[in-house]
Amino acid sequence: MTTQPTPAVQPQPQPQSESEPQPQSESEPQDRAQAQKQAQPQAQAQDQSPASRGSFAPSVPFVPAPAEVEAYLRRIGAERPVRADAAALRELHLLHLRTVPFENLSIHLGEPVVLDEKALLDKVVGARRGGFCYEINTAFAVLLRGLGYGVELLQARVVGEGGKLGIPYDHMALRVETVEGERWLADVGFGDHSHFPLAFDARDDQEDPGGVFRIVETADGDLDVLRDGKSQYLMETRPRELADFAAGAWYHRTSPDSHFPRSLICSRLTEEGRISLSGRKLITRAHGERDERILGGDDEVREAYRELFGIELDALPVVARPPARKEDVNSDSR
Image 1 (cartoon, rainbow, N blue to C red):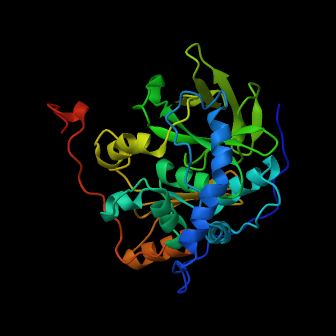
Image 2 (cartoon, one colour):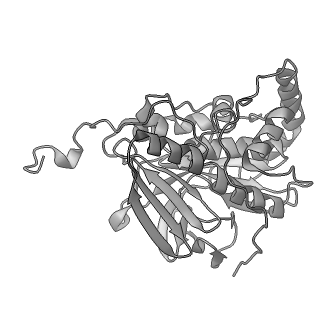
Image 3 (cartoon, rainbow, N blue to C red):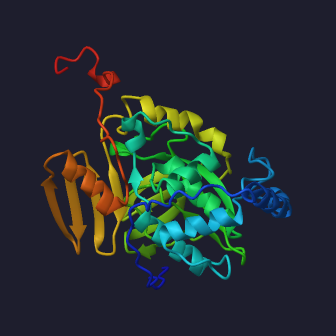
């Protein structure tokens, strides 16, 4: 059974200041190029690891410039860790969950969802927004690489009601390797989930403030991630590259069979529990208690986005009526 102490740092999200996002300096492209060059030997070494052999992952992953790393750390209220070790990873993971919301607002604001590392840095850090799994797990991966961690993208299928699996590339999770060679499952893009990374190679129960987790190997060689005995998602161990997730992102942005185009969500972890805003419904969970209320006019909703999530919005997101779902076609209840 795995237990670890909880970090003491407890930041709250701040609204975007007038000075952010910071304009890119003339030196940032050169800084990023130097970071890419320094990362190449590490990436080549990873290509020779058993986990990476035969993968389509690029030999040189995107590595942010030092200034971009510092801006990201400020965004989540973190200090630069001295070492890329497990303790620092745990703290970064928790701080990310408390400051970068899980949200699908772009879908309902008519904004493009672009799976590009630099664009996602601009969104999460510059615009002080969040995103769904493909966006915020990718951004977190960029930060971790910039701090010296090894990171691989893993594809997973979410387990729904009755054990029904979602589509391939339904979800993105991260396999993170520390300087000591420890491997961790990091996931800041699954909404209400573990607060800390899970030991990737452990097969016993792992206690976490979010529940009791266990990673179980399946007969097919995949990994079943369970929370309190219930399967959350089925994950492959073969590393992927960002472009592989484009079809999954498109599906969840456009398909009536996905819940993302049919509803609004903006949610983040808090010190006391979790706070979520779905349209005008504000849900607060604190110390095991749940409070739900309906907000009034548009100004109150904008204030909630600003004060609770640090998101400034000119226009509020609106859920458009999606096409009929497959099970609704020819149904008397349409």
